[in-house]
Figure 1 (tube, rainbow, N blue to C red):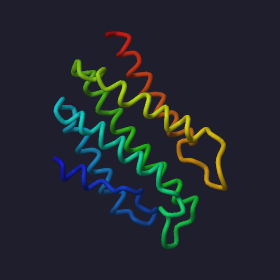
Figure 2 (tube, rainbow, N blue to C red; figure 1 turned 90 degrees about the vertical axis):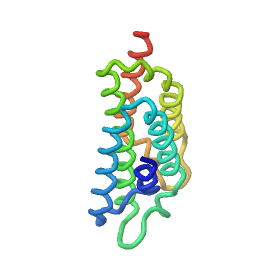
Figure 3 (spheres, rainbow, N blue to C red; figure 1 turned 180 degrees about the vertical axis):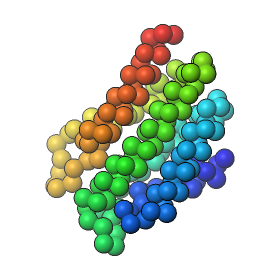
Figure 4 (cartoon, helix red, strand yellow; figure 1 turned 135 degrees about the vertical axis):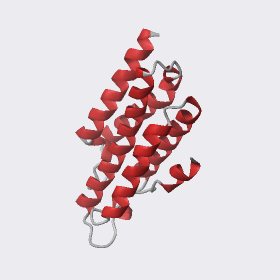
Length: 156
């Protein structure tokens, strides 16, 4: 199991890296199946938060290499972040359908952190780089996940 987590890239694969993108999506699909278990869910939450922190802290100019433009690097990074968050959302929804009661205890590790990414991205930008968490697609998946967890928190 730890091998799956370590196989996830720290940066989004380039547009031309079809194998790399397919590999991380396969890994995330496997994690979505396995991490419904309570003992693995906590690790998933921690690892996804860490991967998102790495994506935010890496300048897009450093993430792009080869023939990739900064806009392409940004889109790849947004797609990778979306896949990470969506995987977590999928696992949470599966856990809720299975009536797992441990989901609510991770509210404080997920919602404030994701909101923090969005609020930080909303701050005035420096230079030409637009933070990835200003993208509405990421904001939508964060909102959906936050709403699900908030409703579950209120149901408890």
